[in-house]
Image 1 (cartoon, one colour):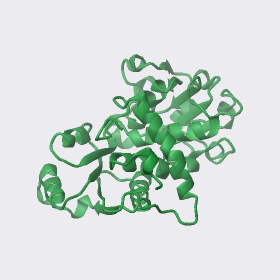
Image 2: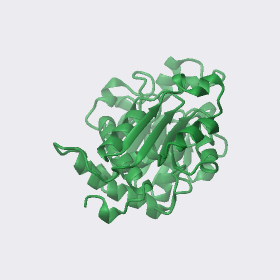
Image 3: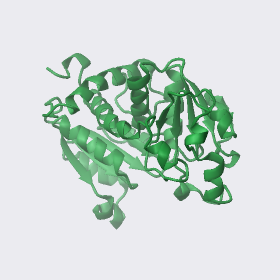
Image 4: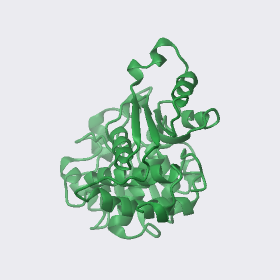
Length: 310
């Protein structure tokens, strides 16, 4: 890895992305064994700090670290000194004094992980910051595509939904375009960031047009908690216009993969038949997330690809 921290896919070189995805294939085999643990990070200490609710990402990072034999410390923000008024930097300085190696952080404010890299010695991994990026989700989405399609270059990927508030969308756009995919973003004008086409994507406000000839559709959750005003009339109208159901999915290629980063709003952005259908790889994304995060933690911990299983 050429970077000591993982903050964005925007700045991660294509070669580093490829190295992570290749190594994750080996770690995928590890987690499918009866004994799912290797000693590669034994003696390292990883701290998980989540300032926003999370089920998949937090448990995935914790499981990935434990399967690498690292010591894991989960800081509960509701019971930490942060609630007594201590600053984030002071809290981290206290934890760092205990000789930790890596910090995995999720925060509601964009830029917090980057800010930390300038003030602490430990490696920092962004587990999602505000509406900025969620790099490991972007990596596991790419891993899941390669696993099924054997490539990314030349594929058409449609990202559907709440693009404006989605850090997943941004990491997917940076990663997929860097790896040679054609990316479409699909959603209502009120949920589309201004000038997003400058990121190298095509913009569609008609779902059928956006899904046309797609090899992969990545459906995003409507993030009502981040919306400061009503950006569409009703959830029912959103589901009618932009919810992906069996009939609308027919506009994509017959073997189109269906992805969702979770958690899902069934019946709103995705119908139950599509979420549970034969084209869905949503649960496999969760499994792949552990393998990808094992690869990230291993490389950020100073490991070399050729030494991972020695």
